[in-house]
Image 1 (cartoon, rainbow, N blue to C red):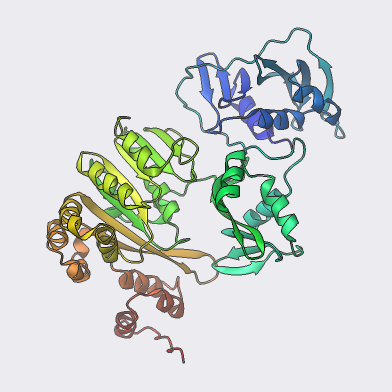
Image 2: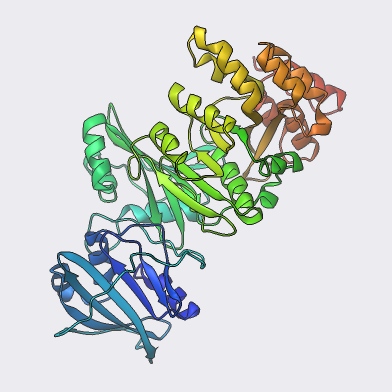
Length: 510
């Protein structure tokens, strides 16, 4: 199926006059009231060539690639007919697609003939489009081939169908999926040679990432399959050759209600300033929780949200808020540079995808102190240890100052662990630290070791210790005691709580 078909269906449903594609710009729908962006993706010439070549006979691909001018009619399988114009204007390739009624589509060939356009009207993209008011229709980034679908998409679609969270490609190995936390080989797939693995990965790798990979042997980017999902990709080298991991990011953002976020967590989304951290090991679902919180803010506040990510994962359409999403290495040089720049961009809420280094952490704390609500992530396993990890990042002579700043700016820490559910799937156990006055004093006075006991007595404020969250999941029969025991940090305390609750105590490993 041509990749533009979902967009053309949306165009027909919404009554748009035209779909305009132009090199270096986002695709837009044209309405009587003005132009509305369709997707976050900025198109490149090769992308437009590929998308338009899929709508016509392969014989005319060269004509489109040369910039036309060419005019043809495309009939969708549903019977909608579109007039398509492709032409280059001052070296910039563009395309315009406009509905021209309904047709009876032959089952064998829905594509009409192509004829050169003697006097085409070039697609004009408005320089100042009307703010987006319709839900975006995602389109995939540039693939390496001009025609056909990149071969790796077959594996990515298999990943989505099997509900696997990750696809692993490694030279000399069969493709592997992570399904409900376990690694399993992809059915019907043979061992990939180093050359085949490289071919699969380079076919979808953007040119900037190819250059970065050649220089550093690592690179990250996002890939999107229209109407299916986005994927966060990491490409790397190991002793056998090139490898890659693709984490699926669903098109649909799970809401706070679907994730079962507590009232205390949602109250953090209504703050006017402060630092809120979502922590946990890699693959624990931090991005999903943060996306749900941003979506909740987007639906319930009228503010300006700036996200800084590497790469952009969940795409947030404007609801009640204006959302600007910036990708490190694509739209900005680094997290710290984008965070500095954000202070001049009139934000209310700033999301920092990852607090990677000392300077980024320092700027985030300063930003939270100066009247902004800042969300960020860290790779820590418990909420109390998060406070120590931040302070320990700084030189000894600065730790007293940072401790004071953190005591005044930190508002909450959500630390999560992902567990296997009974019957399949996975579920998160959330440890929640809400920073009240007493907690602030402990941070300021370097008594963070007392935070767990303070959390135990702070349940009325919505605080939850990890062991309590795990016990709750076991009581609800959502998680087996053995699985909860494996993920507990304080195993002795967890075992004691299991006994007091009359639940099965796991046998110690020999």
